[in-house]
Image 1 (cartoon, rainbow, N blue to C red):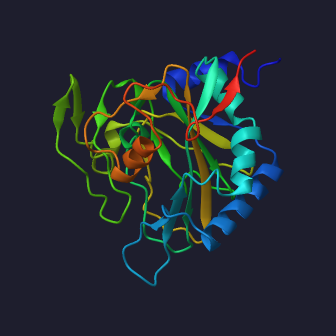
Image 2: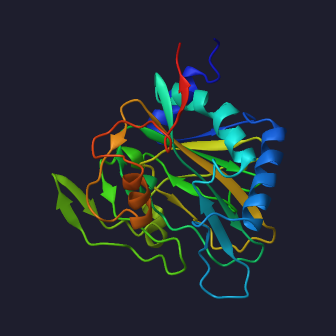
Length: 278
């Protein structure tokens, strides 16, 4: 089977920690995901939340782990080209689902995405990447920016709440030889970093390493509603890792109640296999 990506694209992903891919998703997938979000808002999961603390103003909404509740999301997770693209980027023989979620920032919303890296939010370790797929044309200053090369810093940062105020959870610590530290003040030291950001048309996406720092760089307030679908997946070296107490209690509780033990490989009902090389 012919590769979807070039060697240059794969090398760039490994070097930069994030890569822009042009037109990899058919417009029908975009429309399907938009329908899925509309359905989810009308009938949300117990995990649905608004990160905007003030009531009655334009909000920043999110829901996650909804792939088994919304048919359109289920179709995308199992049948879109993403799992195969991720396998090429991570040189993987097998790809498993980690988590799907979506974000919707209403026009006029002052809420924003804090700078963080996704690996701190999950009880897992191993090689993982994330799809960031905007569902409307999105200018480079309207979306997320990625800190180039930050996946290679060999650092683990504490979890940051997405709610207004962006509180950091937990204190700096060393557990089982791993140091967890406060995330850097990216917004207060923009000149210290090189940022990756792109204009995205429908069907364009960004895929990034789970360790890559990213967040809202621009303080501009959107004059249109912007939504995006994100999908985290892992290669065959990933495993459950219940270390520390900074990941969300609800994530961990759901995994433990489903029978996942420390050190288990990904698989089963919560983390199904999406791709396997022949």
